[in-house]
Image 1: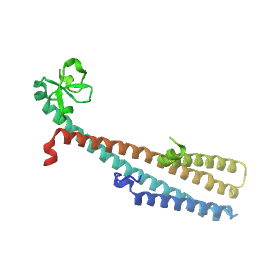
Image 2 (image 1 turned 30 degrees about the horizontal axis):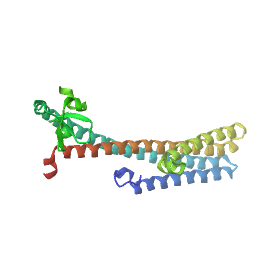
Image 3 (image 1 turned 90 degrees about the vertical axis):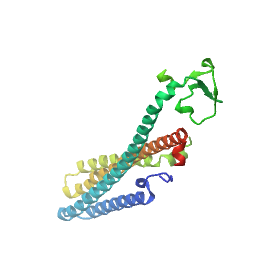
Image 4 (image 1 turned 60 degrees about the vertical axis):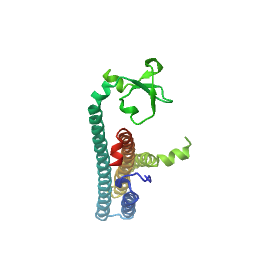
Length: 145
Length: 98
């Protein structure tokens, strides 16, 4: 939880706040336990029992809010990734017909796959002409073959 | 992986497991304490230490465990997003200069 790339939900202050609330609640329950053990009257004990239940409810609420914040952060990140994937798929779909026209086969030096020249996976990379038998076909650009 | 390294990397799951185990143990001991005495004044401390404390500890443990799962999912999504960003930059150089 200390990575610099963590979202705001996992920051140190938020984690510390949760830990402090939980410790306070557990301490309150421990005090209530001690108080009930030292009293013989049920009427006196009920007050402390109520205090313990209240502390447990606060602890549960803090946990719930924490998990909601984390879930929100994860959902936001998931939406961002899906949006990028959507953009990438659109980009590939738009580039598809022009890539299909270019039937020359190329390979990136040091790699084992043979691509079409228009394959987005080799875009911007140093490629050399390749024979069909010089390696396995790239699954991405071979889809439209 | 060494145990110490594993414990450091998975500390929230360790806290989760310990919390749930301690909570279940408190519930069991509380139940036994309540069952072994007929006097309500003697049962109430067991209710506080067993039921209330046990449920609170189980809540803390489950929260810690779920938090670890969500954090892992967030990190994986973050890695995918960065890879997509890098791929997008390499296939569309004009985007980086814009």
